Length: 459
Image 1 (cartoon, one colour):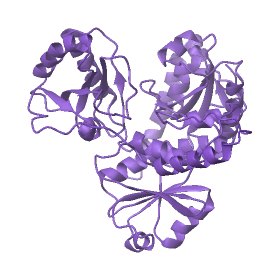
Image 2: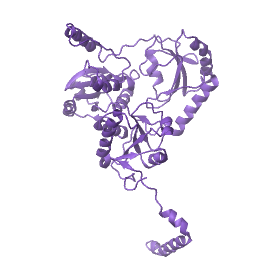
Image 3: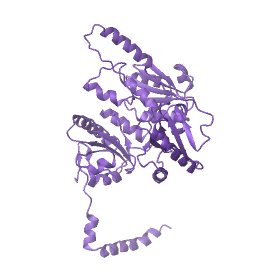
Image 4: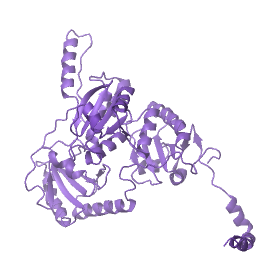
């Protein structure tokens, strides 16, 4: 057997020489030619329509800032964005940062529906379909935490009380999930929430001694501020979704009462709260102190509480082709892993809504035998739904099956054919792209070397 390599070696050399002789001069030039590298500025790729697709193909994880050059907000974020890119350059070369000045890049601006500036999106595995929005992140440290939680574990597993205490006291704010076991829907929602709240550390534990130390007996999320618990939220499967918990946790990044000004406005509106209560009062007013203290007391009473109205769940809510949702069962039905849910949001007094209900019933009848599709409706005048931004009645949202919370707005014609075509197209697209990772991340070593784009040669 050992003589085989020496026997084949001359043949391999001969084949190689013959192959070289058979290549023409033009082909040799083409083989030597290399695509120039994409230009970088402060460790951030300078992207445009002509090189964007290539950047996606050559980069596993790409965080992109879409901006316009004039606004101060874009300039401030770009500096933090570049600092994050610098810090991650050696630690995680698979994560690349890029930026696009969309002032003249109208096609990219339209393709990714860029309405606000700056906007940051995260692209994974070269796909330009459904990039992940990076919202409310302003600081370099938060960008780093955000991408790390998207590409690896989003929480720290706590194995001792000392470890929990170290996390609680290391930062101004910390969030710990206490669970009876680490395999349930509430834990998954907790981990998904951690990805969208990079401002604070997240930990989780199922150790009985750790839970007992904090008096925890049920699956519970606890927010700690300055080393002390400030809010306990009991977690029940199918009751809370990621958006609910994100809203709840992010309220604690603000003071109980925050004075509104140019500096605090960005931070205030980064918290995804639907409604804000504003007090207009001159600080030199004689009644200011009393009014402020009463206002602060009211804020204390309602902080961390979600007051939602809901109709009762009827016994026959799921007996008809179109399922009847209310506030109490909306999250459980809509945010699930196995069913694609198409929902009509309507007002019973609206003439346009009443006219469309028979068509919606026909859609329900068409898909009533499909085990992977639910056609549903909800009266939004009687049920508060925080997870969906309200639109003009009637409006429609599709919630694709999968681990991540996704919402697709429908803007087509109000006909049976158009509704059906949209639904089939969305299901087909989801099937083609597939679920790359149910947890939304990857546990591979980001420090592993691979071919990455550098600034040595410029495009």
